[in-house]
Amino acid sequence: MTPTESTTAVADGAGRSRYPGFRMTIKAVGTGPRGSRALEFAEAREAMRAILAGEVTPAQAGAFLIAMRMKGEDAPELAGFAQAMRDVRPVVAPVVGSPPLVSSAGSYDGVIESPSLSLAAALTSAGAGIRVVTHCGGLLGPKYGVTLLDVLAALGGPARPTVDASLAMLERSGVGVVHAGEAIPGFDRLCEIRDEIGLRSPVHSAEKLVDHFGATRFVVGHTHSTYTEKLAATMRLLGAERAVIVRGVEGSDVLRPGRPAAFVDDARLDLPQAMGMVLRGAADAEVSADLTRVILSGEEQGVAARAVALSAGMQLFAAGVAATPRDAIAAAERSIASGAATAALDRLLDA
Image (cartoon, rainbow, N blue to C red; front, top):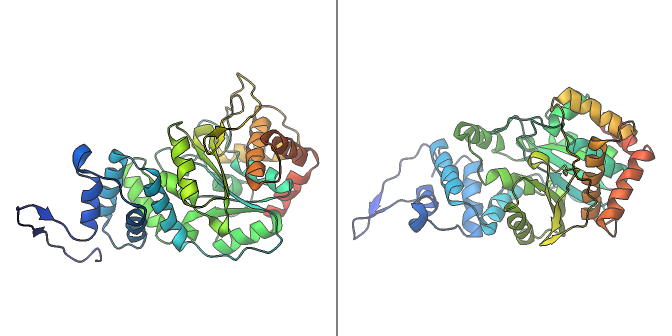
């Protein structure tokens, strides 16, 4: 069924309407506390596939997302939505003998109350010897915050890299910054619908779980503690080798420096704490870019630098190159002190 085709309700013997096509999917999740049900993995995957492909109208897609927001999603549904995005992203064959690849992402709507340090963390990890693919989209609500792509542009890189450009970044620097609108067909159109709705939906979680460039290890940022186990369960369903779930600053993949919280499955990781240390500052892209440079150079050794070392440490731990989280954080600190992190930044921008 295409958006321009009409559909006709069919009445069963009891006089109830049975809707064909995508309207039946909306009915499954949108008939209230007693009538709604969770979608199976395959159903959720098909629903997201149809939305991305433009096979449903914007009104139907919006109704579905609102219904899912009201009902709440479980791990199989979230895995199905993420798998549909994985199904259409470009397939890139892994390079034999290359360093471990970690996908690291947080909320696509960015940050508004703190500097954006996701790119700084990824470059620190690259300096320590792994590869990181980190991703987001364009301006997105409900926060409409500064994203790592905004920071990349402020540093002199592309604001909307093509998939080929992202892969070239990864190959020369160890960090590939992906614009989801370039990598996932139909993503930009879906974002327009989400923006009109103005509410978070399961897509806000599913988009963080895409295995760009074939990543099998992940760092996933989120805000609410109730999502920790849900995200961990989803990553198990998706077959992740290791997934570190972090409660990041404003839902990002940057850990809170005072009381960092990160989990593998149900186990909370042992991380150093510094009570009272809070990351604050302008989220402006230019400010974040300048801060990225001074952190990577070792000139900044305060709260922001600690947040970057912690966050890069989780990427290194996810990659499996350190025995413990504390060992991984120490490796991140050495990446900065040795100049390797700054060298990774130079290679990233050397297009």
